[in-house]
Image (cartoon, rainbow, N blue to C red):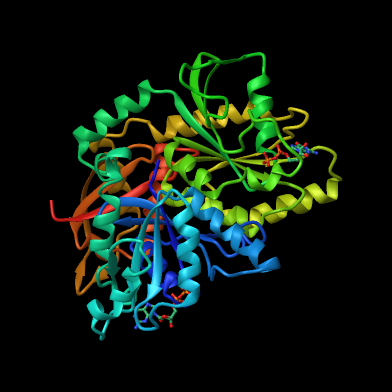
Length: 453
Ligand code: GDP
Ligand code: GDP
């Protein structure tokens, strides 16, 4: 599971600026869940091989009343989900009553809080941030989020103590992307483990209903694993001789309360489930069509490289013209995930649910299908013969050979001359060529380019 950092502070102290700096290092993906999360933003960050989740809690002042208080409360829920809180203050503006209010709130939480004085560029940071020390929240870290100053030190300070509690993501990532030999070792491990299947989707799409339906199937055996608690999100099970671990983000095993529907949904849990899984089953509500929230989740899934199966749920009882309309919309808006199988299901009645597992198995098999240097180089050469890469600075870009760099997703490493200059259109062509030749279904493929032999 990834560590979670929450950015807290009154408006204008620089939370968004810091959020963007932390997430921009990789493709920043922001899940904005309007109405549900108020103005919270979630992003994945990868800084120097350290991966974590950042939450921008939006502006709170600490002295909200009435409706504002409820809003702030929603925003403060994010703090609950965080391992570490960065309490941002503005070194230029100095200590304000609002800062004090937030400090009072944070003091009551059992969280590790770092006071971060932002905007120390061009001022005397030491003297300007001294007054924040008076809040009694410990040392004050100085940064200039807009310029990146002090950010690396802040991460070292706050993440390093957490790392023993989290897997070494850098090492895992390295291993995913290393040479043939490591790739082979990774493959053997993947093939010996259960398929970790995360069932994700926005609130009310039918995740709980689907999970219960799956667990209730005759052919499914659910293990009661020692050490798992009633609300554990990992559910080991077996279906048709194949072992799975369901990663349940909906909390099915808990007794549902009337108003639990919204609260039980946690974006952090969803992101962590995706990260933890081998295959993601994204559930979409046929009655709502594709929403921005679905697309945000899809963005996270694509970024993670996990295999993907799409389930359009609540397909029961729809008029034919609505079904046609939904299908047209899916074609139009989900063209960019054409590698994933799409199923129309009714979790409520069980229709189509069994077939989901065929696609899950296929996706996992594709993601862990052994690929080797000879085969990849061969495909690469055919692609190059069919369609030559363009000239660059008077010389033709030349791809020389390809080898496996990892699995789930399959990583193909291509070596050659000026390969880093290949235009995006050619990269897409290659991607499709590999996908067709390798006959993968349900997994993205990652291609990396390295200069020279
Ligand atoms: P938020 O409301 O807390 O999310 O604050 P923003 O990130 O929107 O920043 C508020 C203002 O402070 C913007 O005008 C930023 O350009 C500015 N700002 C943010 N970080 C820095 C910094 O490191 N130095 C300076 N001088 N200005 C900054
Ligand atoms: P979750 O928040 O994603 O876990 O969604 P739930 O499983 O709690 O379902 C939300 C609502 O949609 C409930 O009222 C379910 O009965 C209903 N629902 C779930 N699946 C289906 C389905 O396949 N068809 C119909 N018509 N309703 C469904």
